[in-house]
Image 1 (cartoon, one colour):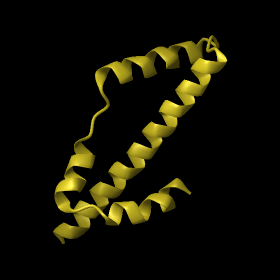
Image 2: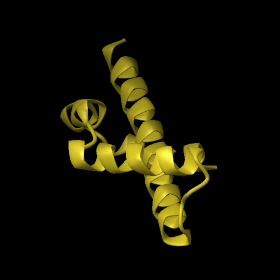
Image 3: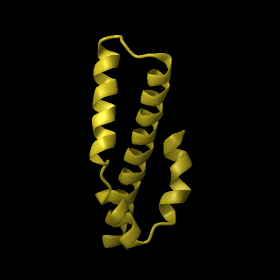
Image 4: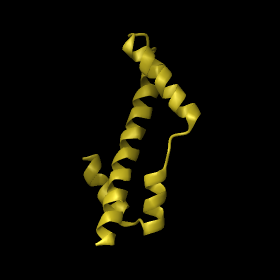
Length: 80
């Protein structure tokens, strides 16, 4: 569903915006937090608050990944 939800948004991107989405990187402190939470999750040591935070970060990462894919497709289709 998220994929379909993002279709209209990806159509709003011009070439420059699509390139910027593709180049988007997670800030180092955020990545470090994700890694810490992932390690705690693997050990079964997440608190309820940490689990909610981890799930929110994973959902955000999924959202960004799908948007990046759509931006790449948008750029590829405009090259043809």
